[in-house]
Length: 113
Image (cartoon, rainbow, N blue to C red; front, side):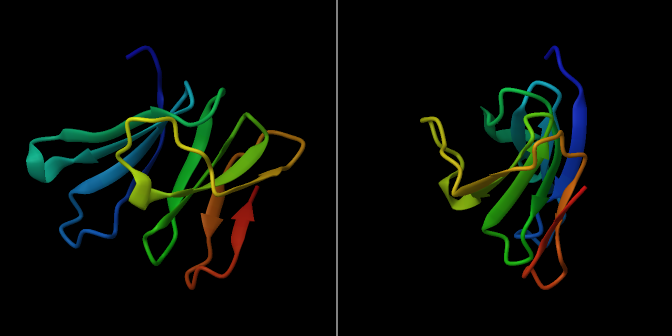
């Protein structure tokens, strides 16, 4: 790979703590299952620019991504893995690059900085 890992988010849908999401400097999101010897279960470009943050909703079905594209986007992780290009459920343009995006503990809010 010719990119940097920007962020890591544990996939709390699995109690073992051995699955996680990575975001990269090339706009890619990768899901790794270390229970299966580090198997990559999802690897797709979700943004044309660097993704600074990937965060999973407390209920585990919605993932937020944000970065240099100036958009925060919501994705349905139940559609991952997919062989076709995914479409975000929702997006919002902040007008400037976004450093981080995190769901509140109860999942009712999404904070971006």
